[in-house]
Length: 319
Image (cartoon, rainbow, N blue to C red; front, side, top):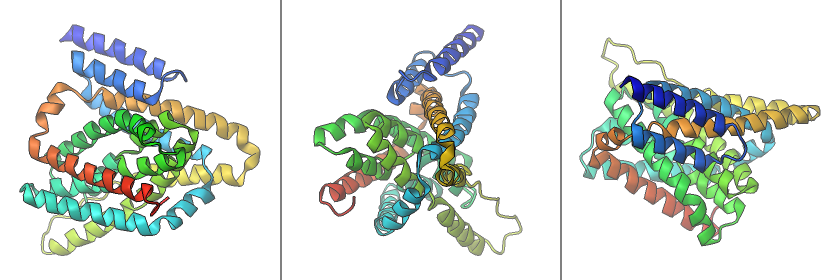
């Protein structure tokens, strides 16, 4: 056990250092992390999960340095109709599938919200609002991480096969891939135009976490108003307003363009480190612990969202 821990720490340190190099792409980082976890396991699982959440937050916030604030707000306003329709359809389909599979309500809600909005961030924000069980949160996060890994590796070649433009692929990635990290990774592999569109649209979509979590909290408060136990506080992902703040700073101060380029580059490398750490959490035990019904819910709902959004993009309904 001691030798395995030492070996893992060495590989982890080497992997992180390599991910700082521009030659290491996002898919390569994720695949390397998964390879290590599947071959020797992960004796530092808690450390990797906590660290990946921190690096994700700082990296996404830093990506704001490469975005124009007005573009983010414009994307949110321009896509508000299909965003509302898409989120509502995903939540409704998730409820339907979860009911047919006889899944617990908290598991169904968390997987559905994670698929509809932005993966792990939405799950973490929603969990305390609905008083979700710890095992339901862990299960939902594991499902999202597994499907994120699949999406990161499958979406870019599939997009090329379908002949999607960079703008179309960026839109599809933002709508159909769960976590911001995997959206960025897939879009980065597809092209700079895809990355710009994907991040802007994903950030605009992620802003819906807060009102939905707040609404869920109000509903739960109403349902349990007779309970003496207080409703736990919601953990709002601070990287969303931080992304907007960084974008605003460099949008309104164009003289800092050189600094913006450095911050954006650092954020991109930080995202590769994040994906490497996330990959290292996908162990054999994680696959075994999923169970087939929650995983089936996540898979069917993901296919519904991916196929529906792709059809809408190709038909010219959104874009």
